[in-house]
Image (cartoon, rainbow, N blue to C red; front, side, top):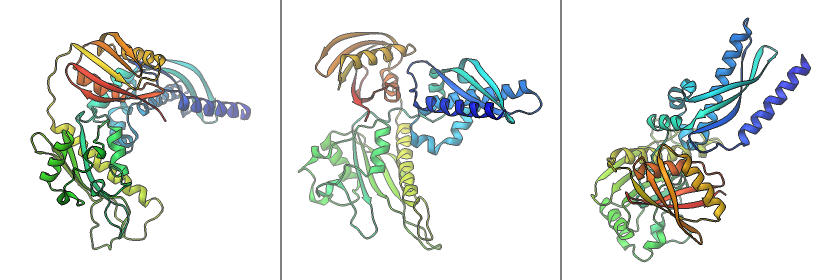
Length: 388
């Protein structure tokens, strides 16, 4: 029995390593192998059924890991359990029990599971676990950063060299959502003296956004270091952010987050907690922006796909293969022309172009990512970005 137990545990570890390393395949369904276990109890058949149920849940969870960005998972685990994992069988097309064995007081199973990725994608969106690709309009980020106590606030429009276009936590969230941001170099020499201050008023922020050709502007400040405050006081917020629509000038969203409170010397994890609070605030802001913009009813039909960053014909062929697998969205595709680093495709869509654009941003393409540069009812511009 000890020998059997050791062998089963070895298989468990090997299968877990393979499952973690194997990429999630694109398309409407994906097949994965999954392990499950359950207390043996008095009835082995019932224990096997419980272990299979756990394996199905684990398989669905693994596919979710490839479809939802880490920041969302960290913040919405309870929602993931409620909307997805508790209903794992709903997203399983078929499964087969490959092997089972008793190990000590547990029943172990190995199951091959076919997960309905299309149904899972729809449920994730309905449950608020995935966002559309935010707004595909160009966004100007005017967020200053207080990075250390006693040091001057840092912001790129001050004119000082070496300052990043956005504080790191802000930039990470915007990148994960596919938000296109203005390169500060486009405004070099155009920042008036009265605008060189850590937090701009709405009129100055909108004026800069119009100069940059942006449709959305995010302004405010963040604090990215832990701060000790007496118990009777409240710490200053870690984030005060606002999003403005440039065309109308109206406020789309406002977020203020206090973040973690430290009444004693912060420990080694304190900085990470503050960073996570800032990221949550940015994500909340963008969720509000997405919810405040009415969805335009755009009919399905013909659309041109303009792709840049094409490294090879092999990458282009793989992209076309993945695109063709999205048969609930794409009726047909035809390659029109190809040149050095670019390609043009003609598509017949069953859904609005914006819906396809949102899907492409989160789709798994293996060795490369796809970012939507621009989207209109007639044309979608994409860029292929190699994974680092």
